[in-house]
Every structure is written in structure tokens, then in C-alpha cells.
Image (cartoon, rainbow, N blue to C red; front, side, top):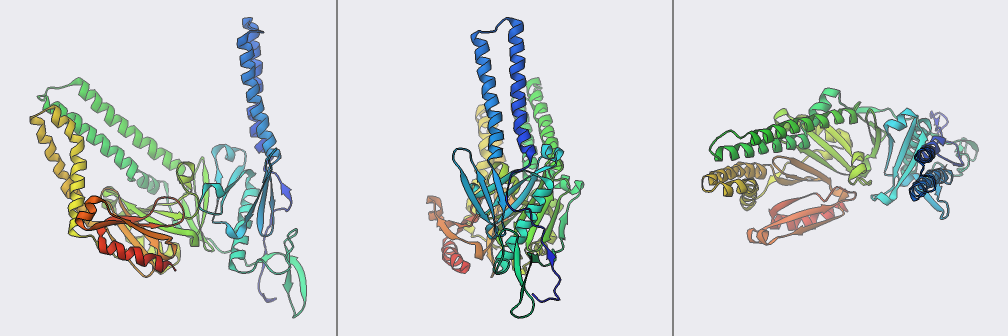
Length: 510
């Protein structure tokens, strides 16, 4: 660093062991207060009913005592849990009888997210979730911090991670207690100054969605479309049953049909309204080399995903979205993002015009090599298997009414022929492509997925062949990458192509 270079001191959180916000203990006091009130209320009721000293009163007292112990346990755990913000690492100590000491190097952080539930927003609190590898056991949670402390710690951890991964830690002679380093001036001379860093990078917006685009993205997603599709299928099934019975009006069938249709509409509306709250204020941006996503009204989520930790990108559409010319993207990182609560930690691009997909993905990763390659279709034998499978899928639900209304109901099985255009469409949109940077796998007709996997992220490749695939000269190829969310790949590839990719793609990762 030359004397003329501008520098800005990093606002480091205070060093030394610290506890989370005292309001964390207040949440434990809430449990304790509820238990105390329950004990008093139970005692008063027993006194009024003349049950004092009975077995029922003793049992109720034991129950309230257990609640009291639970509340006190929350407070004790909070008191014995501390964190220490160091220059190169975050240290967490916790446990009462068994003490646990955990060290989180900033240079190993893969993802750091800030989550604020509705209750936490009311009290000005937030939870930090820090991932250092791809498993849930490697996730560190600091709950609950006051919002200012959480944002300050998050900014410090991201700044130190960038500095540590860019080169040697800070500078020689760094002081862990103060964050001071030796800064060179004239040759052979040093001075002590606070840890310095370049000016913070400017946030560059990639995508912002208003309420209208969020609603469009949610209502055209696979879930609502599937709900509507199942509702219509149930309506067709009930109508077919009525017609097969001679066409006489059946009030019971009409009632079932009305219930199905109304229930379908209610489910779609509930899902749409919930999503509007979940993705309110959706904003995706780039700061330095990190992707930042913020959204939420009652629960605010701020996700940070380093570009170098992105393992693959999944592009999804369906017939309705194709008609509207939009797609959605899921960015999979190496952090723990399994089911349940962690599913909300995946970086989701809700809605994007299909025509903008190549340019957006290249801008998202700041790499022109991420442009999706052209997809090569599968063989004719794969087309036959795609058609046969989907004819069976369509005909199977129609089999019970066809058998029960034999012989006239057998005409319903002709609807199984709808699987023919479905299978042809699925085959037409399936295939694989390889560029110098990416492998691409496309599959599906109703829900179409395009998996983009960089060669550098491939851990291993494997192929398998079922009995029917061996007869048709086909195979299934899967690529193993870090993180959760399954192994991308493609069914019914030509056997020779699957073997070639299985051998070649791991070599490209080196």
C-alpha cells in the first residue's frame, strides 16, 4: 500500500467475550412468567374447588414446576453462551456442565445470513446464521443479537473473509486484541494503525421485483399450477362418473365438485398472499464478489452467497410460464440448504424474462462462460420410453372408474392417449449440452428444468442402467456436487454418451 492510496478503517465489533442481547434472556423469562402465572392460577382454582392436597393438585404442581425449570434453563444457557470477535476468527463458548469451544475462521465462511422474524423485528433483534461447509452440523447460529450488532458483525466477517481469501491475513504484525497492523511508509519504517481496508464496494443491483411481479411469479409456480391441475382433474373425474351413471344429476357429486373447486381457489389464494409477505421488497444485488438477497415483511431475510461457492444453477418453467415468457432460477451453494427451515436459505430468482436468461446468468456470475450451451436431444429409443411412461401415468388414475363402469367406462382409458403428446414434448425439451465451462441437463415437460453445472464444481460422475434401459441401450448419468438438493443429471442418455461424460467431466474439474 502506498501513502497516496485512500483507506477506510473497518468498523470492527468490540473484542472480548460477549453475550447476545439481554432480550434473549427475556424470551426465557416469558416462559418462566407463563409458568409462574400458571402455578398461581392452578393454586387459586384448586383452592376455590377445595382440591388442595389432592393428587390432582400435586400433579398440576409437578407440571408447572417442569415449566419453571424449562424457563430457568433458557436463561442459564443464555448466560453461559458467549462469542468473541477476533481479527481472523469468531470464537463461541457455550454449555453449562459440558463446555463447548468452537472456532469459526472468517476465511472458511461460505454463507452468512441475517434472519429477522416478526417478533424479532418488534424488539429490534436479529439472528445470524453462519455456514462454513455443506452440512447442518457446521452451521453456527447467533441468536438473538440487537440489529446494529448483527449487521456490524456480518459486515466485519465478510470484510475479513475477503481480505483473508485475497492474500495473507491483514498484514504481518496484526494484533488480535486491537486489530492493529504494521503499515509500511518509508523503507524499513512501520507505524501502528487500525486495521485498514479499501473503501467498501458499491452495491450493484441485479434485480428488483414489485408486488405485481412477485404475485405473477408465485401464482405461475409449479405448486399453484399443480393445485389447479389436480382440482380440474378431480372435476373431470367426478363429471365422468356422473355421465357414466346415465347422466342423471347427482347432488352428492355436485357437492364434492363444488368443494374441490372452492378448496382449490382458497389454497391458491392463501399461497399467493403468503408469498407476497415472504418476498416483499425483493432485491438481488452484488457487493464485491458476493450475491446479496433481501426480502420479507413479517420475516426479513438477508442472504449472502459468495460467487465462488455457487455449485449449480437450476432454471425452471412450466407451460403457463412458457406462455408468459418467464422462468425462475435457484442458485445452489455449498452451504447447508436442506429441507424445512433451511430451504428458505436458497437464493431464489422468482421471475425473469426468458429472453434475458443468458445475459442475466452471465451477469449474476460475472462470467461469460456461464451462458447456457445448446442442448443436444436424446435418441429415438429415449423418445419411445418417454411416451410409454406418460401414457401409463395418465391412464392409471382413469383405471378405477373404467373398471367400475365396465364396459362403457373403458372409453375413459382413451384419455391415456394424452400421454403421447406429453411424452413427445418431454422428449423434445430434454437433452444435454457441454461448453468449455458448463454442463447442461434439460428434462421435463410440465415442469421443465435446466441444470447448469460448472465443470470446476464436479466432485464425481456416475452412471446406472436399469433392466429396461439396458435393452434400449440407454443409461442415467448423475453428477455429484457439494451441498444439498440432489445430484443433477439426465435419464435415458445414449449409453456411449453417458460413459463418455462419466469419464470426461471429472477430468475437466481438475
